[in-house]
Length: 200
Image 1: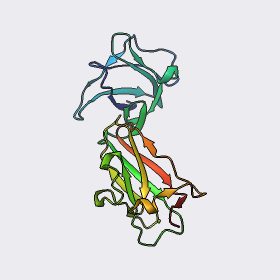
Image 2 (image 1 turned 90 degrees about the vertical axis):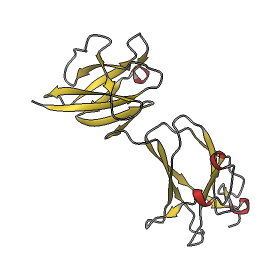
Image 3 (image 1 turned 60 degrees about the vertical axis):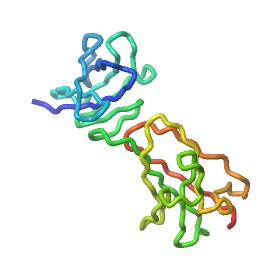
């Protein structure tokens, strides 16, 4: 008995989900539409466990059983042995995680030692010093915060030190356009670099 690949797949547009696949080293695909995914313990995710035998992994495309395909723009998806979660084309290792975004901000050396550093955006009425959106400084000097942001909800935001007079700006001091993000789902990390503060 070889290893297995367990895949959790989330696609709100599909009432039924199928996986059409071939094992690594084989040219033989399953008969279309493939194997139907079953309900899982994770809301919105369907799951399947595929026996790999001696193969290292598998190549797959997903579909709704009625001719609508999710095949990575024709490039298909690849899964190695183990457990994987996939939502909106993004594959992550392990079981599904709640929708969240961890923002990690690298700040200029001129930043006061204690910060504080905040995220301000469309999600908090552009409050420049909202205590619920204050980032925590790590031992590596990087400020971070994890927010529960639903997948597919577009946001705009900026990094501040608590006021619009000390918001992030471009390296030449000019105003910086709002940052934008549409979370893809699952646990996501966004790395930011603050080039300069408006008052420093």
